[in-house]
Length: 315
Image (spheres, helix red, strand yellow):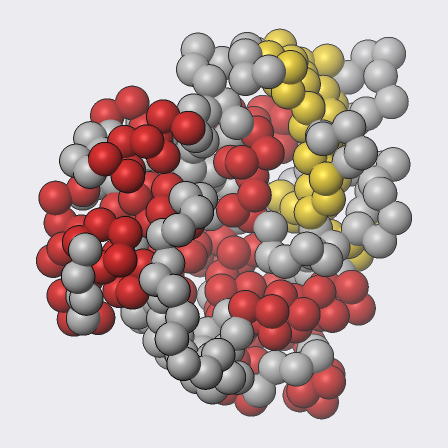
């Protein structure tokens, strides 16, 4: 990888030619929280724009791919050099989809269709943990609306020539300073607000643990699961976004048992049996889930009333 900051509009830039195919848009799509996410935009030319808060400061970055073999990235802001240096890791260079054994025709077809799809690793734990907390026990459309309102109001303006409306996620201190009525106005109940504040309190410890041993997320998982209000489902969302964990099975997800039974087992699977069912795919259990999510017809047809806004995810 080569980097340059001379003669460009960006604070840092690079052209990366990976030794493996990389589907930039597909890989980074897992970091997007709804269509109106102020931290994620798709340009008219198909390039991906994102913001982040690196250890060195806020950053806006733009990534464009010439096919799957050459990737150009530009970044603006105090965190630009750090982002560019970590670009391969962000785009899943530590992931190993080549070792995945599908073991099922549907997965084999999905794996073949999604060449270059990798599990990203942002390394930014709080940026994945807070939205995961907001997604606890609510419909996805409501959770992403909460994230959009909070980041739009309390995040910082995106540095550089970012598309209109983009914002950088708030700092841990800012999350801690949000008043209870502002959480409520954003649509977040007191339990989730309390959990998000606890996560922000321990943000430095979580980020330090992630940076200290990026190839082994066990310490980060242990720290997260020790926090009140954070359970296996929430930790798994961080695992497959921030930690690059292709094995981060989202135990407790409302749809997981139904999707797995319909798509892979041909029969009903109970929630308590999901973990055992996925054991043969370790250490690629999240990859199986992601491939099913990207495969039309993986969910059983609905028979009966549509789901209402009731609690349906565990923590």
